Image (cartoon, rainbow, N blue to C red; front, side, top):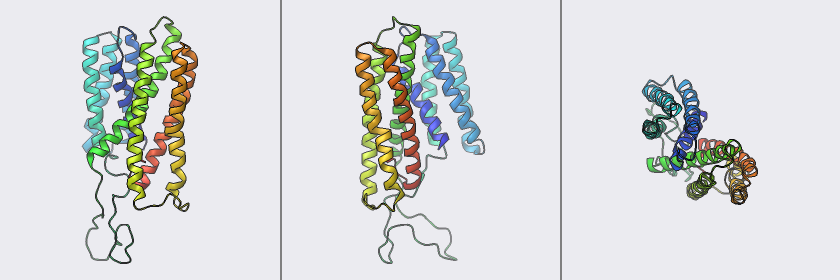
Length: 279
């Protein structure tokens, strides 16, 4: 789960830079994002080193992130944008090569067994050869949408908080970069909610929300309150605070938003490992 979380965070942080301008934000802001992506890529490389099929992709990701940080360190804007686009594209590819791209949990929707009509995979039989999982695996489009919406929520929340910090060293900075990041965060959070609602509707076809013996039912309120509802509330507070140019207060509130988003997305990965769905 740590590998997929790191890739999503790196993708979201670098993707959020497309809404910023070097004429407003100093190039060191872009460099810091690349260095953060470099650190996250190194974590993934270490964790996935044993997989030879994806090792080259993660090595290339580390090289691109490092080179991009150098480009922004020397304020080479044109090459910096080029490395940004290449690194974002490679991060999407890295998600494809990640071991977590395949369903983390059981396939869905499950097919009923012949005996008793119970749901779930068939029991293994001695001498029957390799067992083929029952059910239909999630379409790759839905998997990609899950990755992208999670990355967007993580990235825009983190970047908005870091933009708020920039007002401490640049008091005359326009409020526009912060408002753009907040607007993008709300759009990303709304799309993330759509993905979660769709997954919940699929999961409810074969499960009950009133069955307290199911651990998923106990974790769902935590995931939705901490990872979706609370960030929306505190994000709105940060937006209203930023509108009156109280950037320090807005940054403090965004700290809370980032922590809630982190906890919510880690909880979502845990639920996905159990159910196979991005609840």
